[in-house]
Length: 415
Image (cartoon, rainbow, N blue to C red):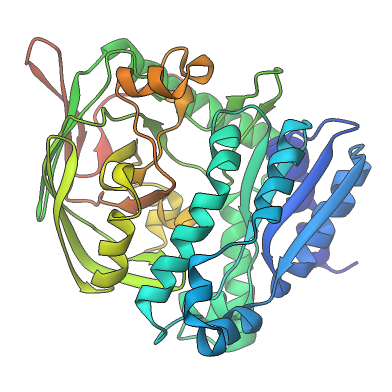
C-alpha cells in the first residue's frame, strides 16, 4: 500500500469513527457522490463495515449525465424531482440510519447553462427534501459532510498546477484540514472540539441580544432569539450519539432571530452554488427580510434563491470563524461551502437549526417560529468575514462589547 492509500484509509476511518461515530448495527447512506469520489467512498464503506455497519448504501451521480439534462431535457422537467428518492431517504432516517455526504463537485459543471433552470431545479429538489433535512438538521440521526479531491475541482482550486499536481495538492490540503497526519488524529480532533466548545460556552454566557458586523461594504446587525445557543463542532443525537457534522470545521454558530436583521452585507468571497458562481454580491435587510440584492455575476441565481419561499429571504444561521483559520490562511477559494465557510465568518439564508435554540429540537414548527426560528426549503451559507471585519456583541441593555477585531477573537479560552 502506497503512502496516499494509507492516508486515504486513515482519513476514511477518521470520518467514520470520530466524525460520524457510526454505531455497530447502523445502516449508512453515502450520497451526493460524483463518480470521481469513488476512491474515498470505497475507503469509507470499508471503514464503516469494519466499524460494524449493518449495510452501506451508496447513491452516485454522474456529472456528464447532469450536464446532458441541462442541454437536452424538456424545460418543464426542471420543476420536478423524483419523490421516491426523498421518501426513501426519510425512511432511512426514521429507521435510525446515518448519513454521509462526500462532496467533490466540479464548480464549473454548469457554467454557461440557463440560470433559471438551475434555480428551478434546486427549488424542486429542496422542496422534495425538506422533510428529510428538517429531520436530519434536528440531530435525530448522526450525519457528516466531508470532501474528496477530484480532478475538475482540484484544477479549479489550483489552476496554476498540472492536473496531477493539482489533484495531489488538493488531497494534501484536505488531509491537513482534517488533521489526518497528526501524531494522534483523534486526540487532535478532541482538542479542537474542546476549544470550539469553550468559545461557544463563552458566547452563551454573554447572552448577547444581537451581533453587529462592520467591514468593507458591510454594516449589519443580526438580532438573536432570547434563548439562542451557540454551538461548536460537536453535536449529539436524541439517542445520545456524539458526532461532528462537518469535517473540517472551524466555526461556532447560532440562530438569528428571523425578524431582527437590519442593514447591508457584502459577501467577502464568491458563492459556488449548484454549479453557478455568484460573485461580488450584496444584500440589504429590513426587519429580518432581504429587500434588495445585487451581484456582478450570478444575480439571477441569487434572486431566484432568495425567492425560493418565504423563509429563503431570512437568515437561519450566523457563524463566527477567525481569519487565522488554517483554511483562510491558504488564501484560496475552494468553491465548496464545506471549506469556504470554514475560512470566514458567515451567515446563511433559509432554514435554522433547531438545536441552536434551548429546547428547540423538541419544539413544533409553530413553537420554533414563535421563538424566532426561520424555516425554509433552503439553507445556503455565504461568507462575509475577512481580516478587515469587526464584530461587536450588543447586550440587552444596549451596551456594546468587542467580539472580533480585524477578523480575530478578542477573548481567550482555556483549551
